[in-house]
Each structure stands twice: as C-alpha cells, then as structure tokens.
Image 1: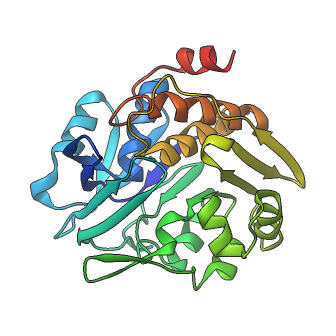
Image 2: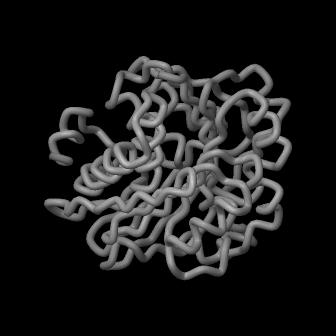
Amino acid sequence: MNKICCIGHITHDKIITPTTEADMPGGTSYYFAHAMYHLNGGKDFELVTSLAPTDMQPVDELRHMGVKVTVIPSRHTVYFENKYGANQNNRTQRVLAKAAPFTAESLEGVEAGVFHLGSLLADDFGLDVIRALKARGVVSVDSQGYLREVRGEKVFAVDWPDKREALKMIDVLKVNEYEMEVLTGQKEAHDAALQLAEWGVNEVCVTLGDYGSVVLENDHFYDICAYPPKQVVDATGCGDTYSTGYLYMRSRGADPSEAGHFAAAMSTLKLEHSGPFARTEEEVFSLIK
C-alpha cells in the first residue's frame, strides 16, 4: 500500500441541527485521519495539520491512538459554524476564525505516495503547494474549499480562479453536484466529469448524495450506487469519508469501481452517527454485500 498523507486544518466546529447543538473538532483532515485509523490502525498514513497551541486536544487524541501527526504552528484555529436544516444536504456556514495557509516551504520534509489536500477555504493551498507535491507523488484534492471565500464571518460561493492551471497537476479530484456545476457550468455529472478530465484531471469522483456517485477514470465511467442508511444522523464529514475510502482502496490496488463502492458504503456508515467514521473495514464490505 502506498503511504497516504492528508494535509489540512483541523477545525473547531459548532454543529447546529434542528434538534441538537454541539462543539467538536472537524475539518477534512480530522475526519480523514479517524477514518484511516479505523480502517487499518493508521498504518502507512500521516496527517499534516495546522492549528493554535490552545486547540491541541484532537491532535493529542490522534497521537494517543497511534496516528502519526505533524503540526505546523498557527496563531489561530479555523472555527466553523455549520447550521443544518431538516434536509442534511442543506447547510449554511460562518467562519469565526482562520488559520495560516499551508506553504510549499512548510511541507518540504513531507513524503508520501499519495497526498490528499483537504481544502476548507480558498487560500488554504496555493498553486506552489500543488506543484511541489505533484513532484513527489499523486495529488488528490477535495474542491470544496477552493469554492469558499470568507468575507468577514460570511462564506461566499466563488469559482476557483486558478482552476485551469491547478487541474493539470491534480490526479484525483472529488466534487459534489454543486461544486461540479460551479467549476464546469455543467448540470449533469457525466458531462461535468468529462470537462474536468479534459482540463487535466486523471480521476474525477462526483458525489451525488442519495443518488450515489460517478467516477471517471481513463475515459471510462463507473456509476456507483448509494447505500441507504438505517437512519440519517449527521452528514458532516461524509464527503471526507468518501475520499478516505476511495484513496485507501486505490492505494491498495483496487479499481475505481471497487474503490467507489467501498467509499460509498463508508459514507453511509458515517451518516448513521455523529462524529468521524468509527466502524471497521469488515463492516464496510458487509454493507456492500
């Protein structure tokens, strides 16, 4: 298995739903690291994150579990407020604090076969970071942060200004149905995936919520079903869980269809409880069967 390195800010999240309100750690990197731990004990995995010295509890927790975590110091921690409606696909956000962006210099000593950039805000990773990591391994990106710009406390939806240059250097790109339309102008998943591939992405994963997902690799489409959850508890981190499952399986030699089904089943198991994915690889395969 190729070593996977996830790079991204661990956040302080306030989650507000119609029935509950809770403060918890979050961010792509947090959900990714916990999922990797539950799949294989965090073997061949490293988390690189950045947060304030006063918010080290989630890092201590991961290190205690045996996950390798490298911390780049930051004066502040990213602080998100996520408010969900009755439909878990509907979310409004505020950003109450921002951490320092990642730089190519700060990541100089980081080595891996696969780098997953968990972008949360538009300025988390510049082109210099993508370029530097591309020279060392496979680059995977979740597009969500590149399409979020913070002005004051409010988050505004924006297009990705450097997308054409960045996408040439990205091997695996995950987008949802909203992000694919912003990036490509296409409303249909297959059309959007083809456009992103034309711009240079090797593997495109389009997640479509209850409608499953679509993976395009090497001009071949794989339509992945969604697995119905027993109950819907918390959608936070489901996209990050999908990325974890997909990259985990691809790094072990699975084809895009196997990886996509594994990722979809992982996301369903995550959806059934609050917090990060905490089930086992065996339970994922059991759901697929």
